[in-house]
Length: 243
Figure 1 (cartoon, rainbow, N blue to C red):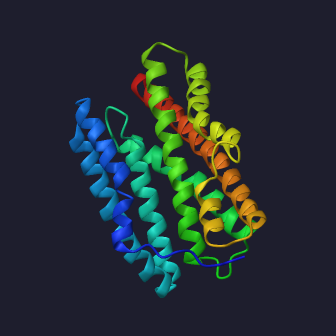
Figure 2: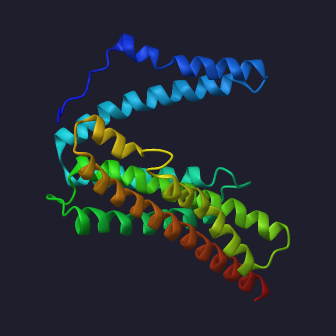
């Protein structure tokens, strides 16, 4: 099987922005705020170009402390973004979100890189960083969905136990839907990229199975961790007030 993929020139890359132009036109037509779409697209472009150069440097440096620093930044940013739907980003909420993302994400990362892939060295940035990105992103989304739904349930007068169950279920819905759809509705990003690069589809499938399992696991772990920690913090705070 051919192992190379076509190189995308700058001119041809511009063609990829045709759907973006269509989307912006639709936003303008329905007065939905074209500026947000333009800003998001520009930010996406800048961020990806910057990360391209950053990853090139990290891969060439091949140093464990750089990889660890990148993981710390990922966890910190993911935890901050996870709280975006909430009304207030208090230090205590951020600490809870960070603990949930870090705990679930690092455990999952260690399991995959050491138990499944047996990376040598353990910090191999070409594997550790892309996998970390997927893991912490899934944890971020799960915490965000769980936290937003948990607050809404409590505000509606739902009991804590029912609020936790409802919130965790809401956090898991997107990932469970993805598990149902994979291979039938869509070919996931990693699998598609490997196939385009010329990897045997059966090998690509194995890697995608690993990815789907780790994302499902980290989603459940991070959502549950946030809800447990948030509940304990609320109970401790209430107890302190009574005392």
